[in-house]
Length: 153
Image (cartoon, rainbow, N blue to C red; front, side, top):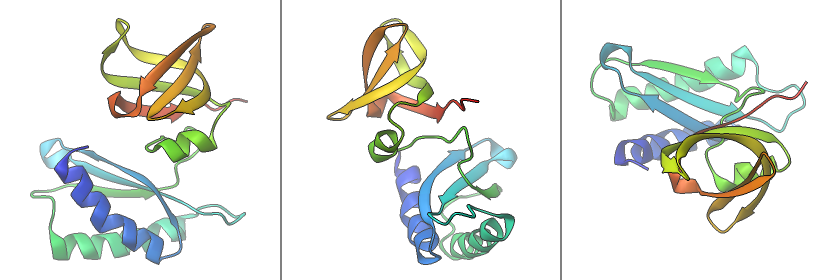
């Protein structure tokens, strides 16, 4: 995890939790003037996350970002729920979705490939266990660049 990512998480997580939401994770995509800081929030409430929740978190995060100024240059701030195809960031989140189908991309090739899609069958230490075409892969969490739940309808 990069220093910038860690710094952003340390600034934003307490703000989100202070407003009564679960900090699900964040993505920072640096592309010059088109940079995006995406913050995902979750709640235990039955109603889920609504537009007002996102707006409230956005206002508070914007305020702290204006004061601390951790990102030089322009960027867009987006606040949303993780949604049905929710991204997974931490081992505890993978644990919550055992049995789900997951699509993931690695930072570097593993067994000759970077993209995997299969059933999340377990966690072993710092590794995610993924069943792909009846073959089990143990993928170290630090090698996972991006992972999402694949909605099943």
